[in-house]
Length: 346
Image 1: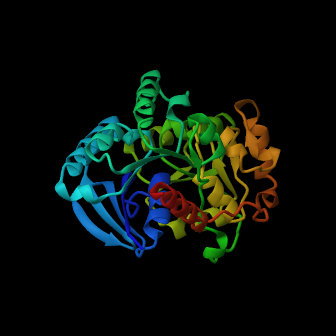
Image 2: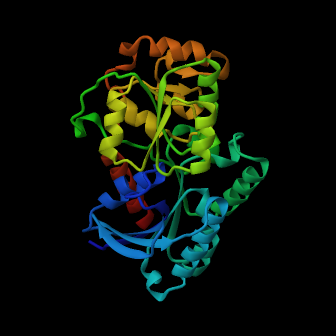
Image 3: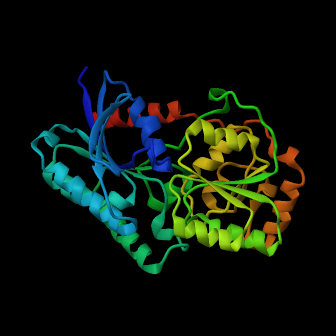
């Protein structure tokens, strides 16, 4: 059996930053059989290093800048990496999101015998929570992404937004994989990046307007000190935890009183599925991607009914403990990726 060589582009160092794409690459591509696949991943990192982890060879590219400039610097360093003679060996290039879609035409020119796949994790071009110019950039990236051979969506909503050729629905670790005991303490839990797009500023403003004294726990891959100070100025009963492990995050999910997902933009919510797979029903903004989890109507909120929905779930903590009805694990995702790669080889 011939070995397929894959190059994955667009993730971060999951040891330090546990965001959705990094977890996705770690859980899916690092688990592909090393008898059938050689997988290399180019990572956004704070150091330059090559390491072997699981079935994955990780090339850490040191990126100094932040925000949009970070993505530009990373893409330039990836382009330099692609000019190396050794890069000719890759059969499939997997681009993780529109932020690296710019590389697709270059890859098609330099490696015309290879296949290029783009994985759409969110619909940036449809996100009204970001600036007009960022949406324009996303539309331009979408144009470049159409040079890819395959387009993979992680949810039904994303599949419709991009008219993707393949839909491989996202997964999450299961409660059964982590021996957790559910205990409802008095904390409200937010998990995600501390950016306005994820709804954290809107959430603390809502809690402040309610004159709430509830303890809000924020778990973020990276904590921006300016945003931290801004949030503390709005709402005093807030604490922050940075770069926790998967087990630690699941422990917080199991022990909190309520998980809240106030995000304005989700292509697929890893937090929603992790909460459900831990047996917890989250309170979540009414978004198309989150509706796919088919949670009770009472768990979805809009701006006009947030306080009502929030208090109803907060005052009845038993309602947030649910039988696990949505339990798609990462192994199913991995198997569907293997099927897709085999189809590419035909």
